[in-house]
Length: 401
Image (cartoon, rainbow, N blue to C red):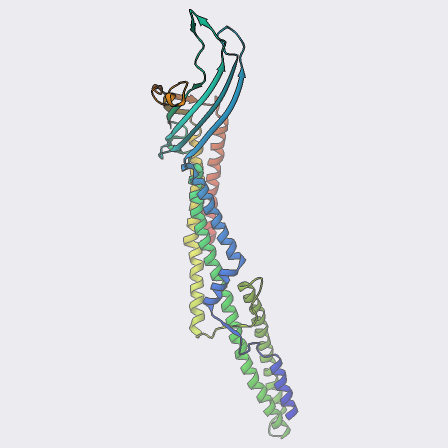
């Protein structure tokens, strides 16, 4: 009987729960924190949101000051139509300018400075002893201020700011999607941890039960041999022992497989080795299950409806812009220009810089049939309705689950 008892102890030790004294104890909070830091799924959620923010930041470039500059060199040979024409012109020209949309109404202002230096080869012409050759070289500087205001198409800057409007809405939707994905991920990780914890507790429980019933089997064998117990009692206890052994091994297999899954979620590239869940009170599992269910509720109600509403807002913004695009182009413009000329740079920018030009008016243009704008509007109107119906269907399916 001593050999039987020794063999039984060795068998139990071989399949005992693989949790040594130096195993790392993992709480739910530490598991979730480490998973969020290292899991590629969460990293992909973060990058999707960062990408949306980057696209929104790029769209805000519509409000940037647009700077432009020009520098050119030219040489031109002229036909001799009269004895007063230059035979050759050499010119250096340069300009710098900037423009900016200054109001939500789409008003754009611009400012530009330009200058040119021209040297011309004129024949020497004298009348009455007076040389009539024009001044050369010649500097022609100017400063120009302009303003443009759309009155029909692009009124209120609806065309200019469409991309910004869409990106702003999409960034808000990306934020809600990110929060929803993170909450769903935490909910799934919570459920996984609770499954792991439950398998651990059950394996420990049935290990103790199996050890106790194995001791009873040993004692009962001695009693049967001593003729103080029936063999039927031994068979009945052996059946219970086999049942508890199978149950224990099942929970042990669940625990081992879930441990590998837990480790892979924490460190996909380098899973931690010996880990075990933290000891908890019985009410802990019920509390965490309720919290996880609450996260799912937030996903189905609060976040989901907000995301769907924003997707429809995008289509409505595009539809408004497409409706405006059917209108003709009618822009008011005005321009003020001060300029001068002189044979010397300083003089051309000084006393000779005293000529003023003012202009203004309306510019009108429209395609004869405007098929492109009308067709685009009709297509977008149908798309917006389709998105609205799809959103209603999605909410109905979400709330009916």
